[in-house]
Length: 230
Length: 251
Image (tube, rainbow over all chains, first blue to last red; front, side, top):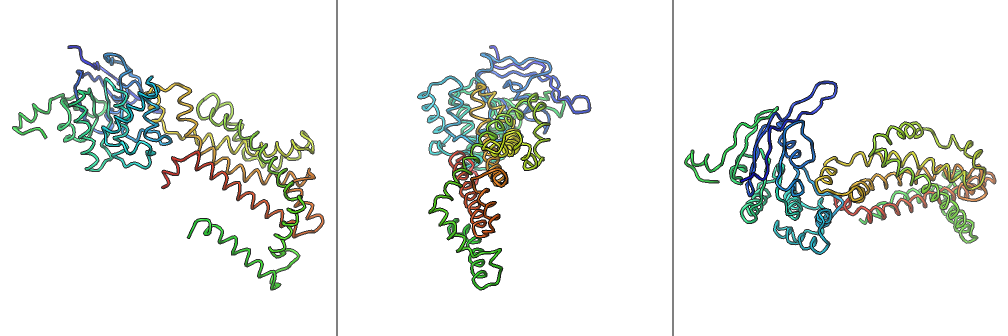
């Protein structure tokens, strides 16, 4: 089967003013199949966010290839920081994205309603992001991303600044879309427990300049340890 | 205690103290006439229509100056923030022109535009232009990069990027610049009306000084203060309507 996403020998450096360059990613290769849920872990500054941004097409590569079945049109990204436009309400944020994706007004409204209900935010459609809690903002971002019905959903530490309860709520939504929609997802996280409990594959990166240290299935790890899935 | 009562307290207290001091002859009446006399003077000017026409003439000059200076400033401020070329072309001029006291170029402007309306409008426009251009530049430059990344990811068109990101994000800086410009505009308006005018609040203050009518002079000053309060309140109302998300953040 052709993988949905194929990253081949990807390299990326950043220029440092007055100096040479800072190599961040040093030849990363991996694949993601349709319906897969891959978590990427690694030390701070090893280029995890850069990797996601390259896959999303926001940043360019120095060398290497990113091949996506169906092209980049079907990618949605949930950023680590708040990524809703603060001057638009939650609903307006979603309608803007959907309008830009070519949906007509009534379809966009319908999708907005459904996706907000799916993340338990139906009552907050008219709220400005500043009035939502951290967890609610993250779920709203996720709703916006899901409303675009992406082929590939990228998430950059979505639970980074959330309290335990908000984190659990977000995990529930992610598990739900992974099982129900068979959504192909890549999650960048610092939390091993999160990676093990949510994803089907975990990729560990080395320190900068990063390379792939290991890719494993959490079930294999648990089988080895004789434990059960968290 | 409601906000408007708290805000009115200190000016009303000062006026009451001034009134008592004047009535008890603690202060020199020639320089500090009692506020009740000043308001009586204002009332009589209002009845005769002089005050209304002076205020109307001055506000029209101020509005024209703000518009003529503010619109190009907004465009150039946004261009400087979004284009390196525009920044290199305009920024040195704006930075060099900003600290020059605009009142210092009034004689030159009178020479170029004459004693009529245009010299007063142009001096206000000049003061507004530099303030607004720098405010808008600052505001747009501070838009966080991630919003543009999101725009790219959502494949927003250039027009949508302007409408959905740049303009709303620049609005707080724009309104802040407008507030500052109203203050500076009043100063330039009154100064220009001192020298080259037969109408307006500045002219009325100058004429009162020439006739040593100190009560009317204070009347002019009070009028400016009341107008400034009214205009600032007006801008705050626009702010609330135009930037509901900011109100939401403050709450």
